[in-house]
Image 1 (cartoon, rainbow, N blue to C red):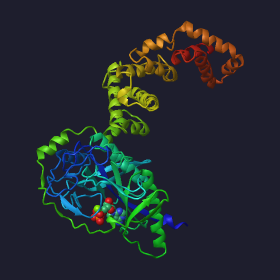
Image 2 (cartoon, helix red, strand yellow):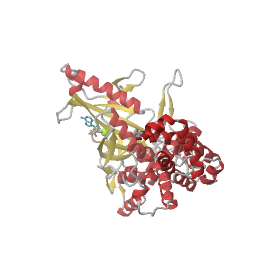
Image 3 (cartoon, rainbow, N blue to C red):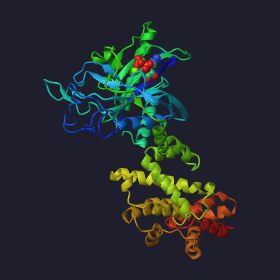
Image 4 (cartoon, rainbow, N blue to C red):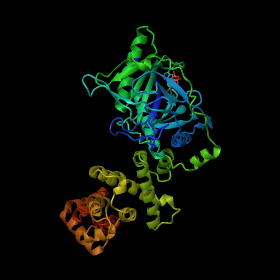
Length: 496
Ligand code: ADP
Ligand code: MG
C-alpha cells in the first residue's frame, strides 16, 4: 500500500488582505495599487527620522467589519507593536503590527468542498502595514525598490490548523475573498497581491491527534501554486518521516517553475523580530457604539444568501453558488425575484407556487445573462434590459406563452437589442408566441397524424407511450409555438 495514504496534511493559513482604503495605514499617502514607482510616498512612508505615524480610522472600521462578519470577538482595546527586521523594502527598519493584543479574536468561516461543509476556525485578525516591493528581474545589475506599497494597510487573518487539503485551502481563500468583496473592504485580487497567504503545513498519520512539526511556505499568491506547494510539501514530509527522519521547522519558498519548496535564506529565516510596543502609537480604544454601528451596517452576507437561495427559493446549490459569488449578482437576482412576485398573478405569500418562477429566473441569470456579460466583457450594472422586462420574460415562459427554448434562443437576443420593449410585444412581432388556438393546432395535429398512419395504428393497439412522439412532432412542425397542454389534449382527443 502507498504510504502516502496513511497520512493526512494539516494546514493553517496566515492570510494577508490589502484594504481598499484611500490612504495608507499611518500616513495620508495614496494607498491605491500601481502608480509611477515611488510616487505614493511621503516622509512618513519613507521612514524619515522624526516623523510620526497616525492611525487611519478606516482601517480599524474595516477590521471590525470583517471581524463581525466572521463572528469574532472585537477587542475594544487593542495595541500596536514593532516587528523589527532589516530589509531594503522596509525603510523604517520595522513593521507596525499587532502582536500582543490584536483587534479581533476567534470566529470562523464555513467552506463547502463537494458535498461537505466545514467550519474553519479563525485564531485572530490583526492590523498591520505592508512593506514595499523589491524588483529583482528588471535590471541586469541592480535590484530596484518601489515603496508605493510601503505602509498600505493590511489585515492578517490567522486560521487554526483546520484545513486538510489544497482543495480546502482553495475553498477558504475563495470564501474569504468573496466575503471581503461583499464587505467592500478589499478587492481580494490575488494577481495584484491584494490577497496572499503563508501556508503552514504538517503531516501526521491518520487517526493521530497530536500535531506534527510544520513548515511555513511564504507568500503564496495564486491558488494553483498553493495546491502545488501543499502537494509537494506533504510528499516531502511523508518521505522524511518514512525514512525515520524528523521534520525541521523551516520557512520555505515555493518555486512555481520547478514545483519545489526550498528553505528561505534571508529576512524571514531569522525568527527574532524583537517585538515591542510601538511607543509612537497609543492603544486603540473603541466604543461599543462604534462596533454596534458597524454591525448594523453589515450587508447580507454570502452564507445567508446561499441559505435563502437554496431554502426559500429552492434553487440548486450549483445555481445558488453562482448567484452568490459576487454581491452584485446576488442583489440583481433578489431584485428580479422581488419583481417576479410583483408581476406574478399569484399572491405574494404563496412562495411554494412561485418556486418554478425562481428556478426559471435563476436559469435566465446563470445561463443567459452572465454568459452574455462575459462575452461582451461587461459588468452586471451595464446590462441593458431593465429588471421589470426580465421579470416579464420569465413570466412569459412560465405561463407557457413562449416555450423556454424559443425564449432563450430567439427572444433573449432580441431583448438585448431592444431592451425597452415589453417581451410580450417582441414575441408577438417575431411570431414566437405559443398558440393554444384550436384552428391553428388542429391543422398541425392532423398533418402530424396523417404523416405516421402506422404509428397511429400502434397507439390505438395500446402503445400509449407514442403520445410523446406525436407531441414532439407537433412541436417541431409548429416551431415550438404549439402550447403543450392544449396540444396534448387535442392529440388525445383525435387518437381516442
Ligand atoms: P507562530 O506564532 O509561530 O507564527 P502560530 O501558532 O501563530 O505560530 O501559527 C501560525 C499558523 O500556523 C496558524 O495558521 C496555525 O494554524 C498554523 N499551524 C500551527 N501549528 C501547525 C501545525 N502543526 N501544522 C500546520 N499548521 C500549523
Ligand atoms: Mg504567526
